[in-house]
Amino acid sequence: MKVPPCPACGAARTIPGACPGCGAVQGEGHVCPHCRGLTRVEPHPTLRWVCAACKGPKLPIPIADPVKLETSRVMLREAKPVPRSGFVPVAAILFTLSTLLALMSTMTIGKAITLVAAWTVFGLLVRARRTRTEKSNGALDRAYSLAVQDYARNGAASAKEIANMLGVSEDQAEGELTLLAAENPTRIEVNADGDVQYRVGEEPKSDLEDFDERLAAAEKKKKASL
Image (cartoon, rainbow, N blue to C red; front, side, top):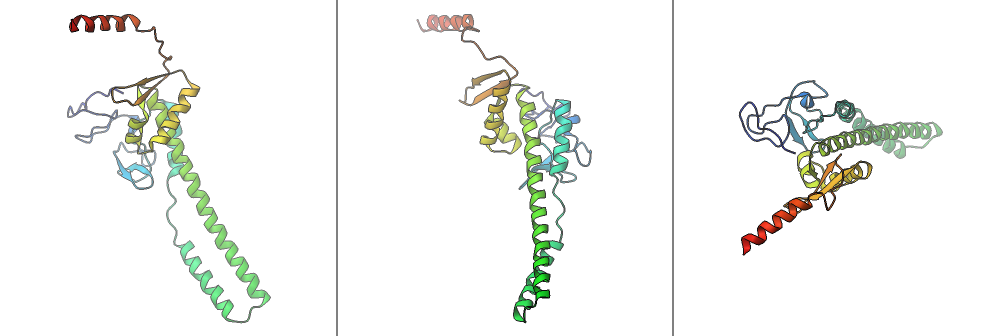
C-alpha cells in the first residue's frame, strides 16, 4: 500500500495517518475505542498493541471501512482485560488452610460439606476468570482479522507485511488472506522479494492481459543485447 508522507514533518510513512518521525496521528481510524483520544500505540506483551494513553487494546493500523471500524471497536472493548482481583488468590489460601486444618482434626459430615462447598465456589471463580480470558482473546483476534481484511482491500498485501505491522504471526496473516481470497475476487502476485501479495477485490490476472507490454519489453531487451 502506498502511503503519502506526513503532512506535518514530511517524513515517509508506512501506516496511513501515523508518522514514525514526529509521532503525529490523524484520522478517525486512530481514535482509541476506550478513551476516545487520538493517540499513538505502543507494543504490549499479551495484547499486541495498546493505546499509549489508557493502555487499552488498540489496532496499530486504521480501518477505512466504517462498518468494520465500528465492529473492531466493539471487539477491542470486549478484549480489554478485567482488572486483577485479589480475591481469588486470597480465597485459594484460605481454602487450602481450611482443608489442612480439617484434615488435621476429626472429619465430620458438617466439615466435609463445608469443604466441598468452599472448593466448588473456588473452582467456579477460576473457571469464570478463564472463560473471560478466552472471550477477550477471541475478541482481540476478531478485531485483528477485520484489520487484515480492510488492509488487503486497499492495495497489495503480503502475509509478511501484515504480520510485521500488526504484530501477529505470518501463519495467522496468511490464513486470513487465504480466506479472503477464497471468498472474494483476488489477484495474487509475487513481488520482487519473492513474497506472495494479495489484491482483494481485483479480478485474477490473465496471462494475456499485458501480453503486448511484455512482448514489447522482450523485443527491446533483445535489441539491446545485439
